[in-house]
Amino acid sequence: MRLVHQLWEREIPLPIVEAALLLASDRRAARPPEAIPLQPIRSLHYFLPVIEELLHTPLRHWDAYLAYLHGKVTLHPAVGQDSATS
Image (cartoon, rainbow, N blue to C red):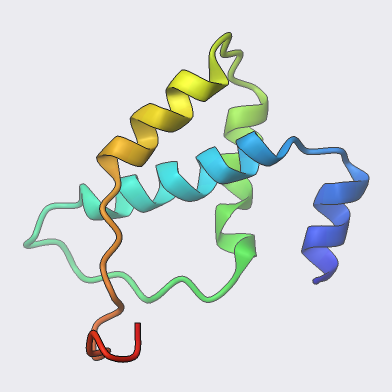
């Protein structure tokens, strides 16, 4: 919760945080299938570099960018979970 508070204190806009979550997820999903599997994301800290990247990326149309990212990212249950628990 401390990181969330820090982001709030820095007045990071929620659309940037949302875009960072989606963009990082899309980047992970786009990895080649033969690449070494990545560990599960366990913390919001994983997304900090992408949040910083987006803060320095001027975009005029955040709504359109978020819609684009939502269209690219397909949510999948974590490996080992069945559909009854998700």
